[in-house]
Amino acid sequence: MRVGIAEARRLFEVGGPRDWLEWDQRVRVEGWYLPGDYGSGFRVLAALESGEALGDEELAVALCHRYGRVRRRALERVVGRPALLPLVVVRCGDWAGPVRERAREVLVEALDAEAAVRLAPLILRLADRQRGGFALGLLDRVLRGEGTGTLLESGDRPTRRFAYRLAMEEGLLSPAGLARAAAHDDDAVVQGLCADAALAAPADAEVVDVLLGARTPRVRAAGVTGLRRLGRGERAEEFLADRSGLVRACARYVVRQLGGDPLSWYRARCAEPAPPPGAVIGLAECGERADAGLLWPLLDHPEARVRARAVAGLRVLDVTDVPRMRRLLDDPAPGVAGAATLALLPSAGALPEEWLLERLGADRPRWERVSAWRLLEAHGGVARLRAAVALLEDGDVRLRARAEPVVRRGIRWGTYWPGMSGRSVAEAAGLLERGRLILDAAARRQDTPA
Image 1: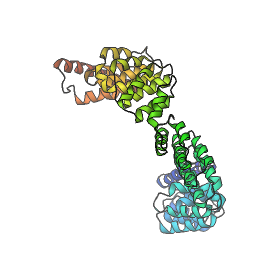
Image 2 (image 1 turned 120 degrees about the vertical axis):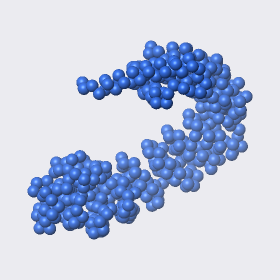
Image 3 (image 1 turned 90 degrees about the horizontal axis):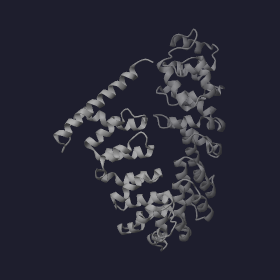
Image 4 (image 1 turned 90 degrees about the vertical axis):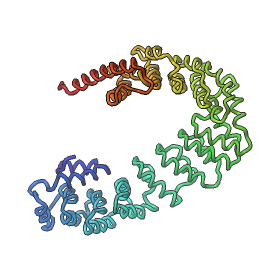
């Protein structure tokens, strides 16, 4: 944003907190003048002291002028001009004492509930700055009992957090209202604040039910924890197979506290023809290596989510059979192939390099190519370098971005790695030279004007 009348007018129309702060910075750095005839700070000051008529746009520049006397005089003109109140808030933290004190006096007179709601996002962004506490304290005093409800619906996240904290302190929200806010707000901080406050109230089945129905794992986990106070361990069992690991862990805690045995429950579910996917990974989270016997058959389950959780569960149990896992790299479900890739990374050296390089071909599905790259990268040494150089001219931008740093590191550090034979060193040198030529050619193409 440049400094000028037109830019100031746009600022009044659509400016947000960041725009006002940027304007303050720009005027100080770039705009040491008012538009028109006011070319110096002294002329601006003379205009302000003489009572010459100045528009809001001109005062917006004067309020941010590099000279403190100009800023101080401009503050005398803002009374009755609500459009300029954001800059009054900014000046409340001014480094110059006279400017700061006058701005605070103006803000105290002008900040009613309506103005507080409008200025809250800006005040909250300034609160962490040196001398930013005054406006925040004033905002708190003005909004207590008034205006808070409007801010609960604010699209600005810091403002919503402030409003919910204030509403909780004032007791303006019922436990059920807090639970609904936790379940529906998209901000994790608000979710946590409201869920904790809802559960701090006396045990209430309605509150817990609302939390349990939330889409966010953290809120559902709070609801599961609340089941313990209600003594409803049987309901907690429903969440042992939740899609979220956090919720499953809370459910296991509650079930154990109320005398249940989550491990037996998981074993029974995994022995069924159609086990819930969450139960498959849940078994691994609290089971023993011997429980892998229940997971191996699930690698052939018709449901992809069950296969993927079975692979992940075997990895959690640290049970890896390379031949049996390798075939899952060809699974038609990307999620299963991805889980198998993670499980095989520690054993990547046991997979044939040529086979992996074939899977890196441009005719393969993208998830298969990503899997092959990750496993070749885990191979290390020349195998990784071969794959990286092969991808430098690939049509997949993201794969190129993964490969390029490998080649650049090799060029920078040289061709020797511990354990390499002379033949491997020679091959690596050739690969790095080819990679350097490809990268140089790409750089030249970028520098050539279209």
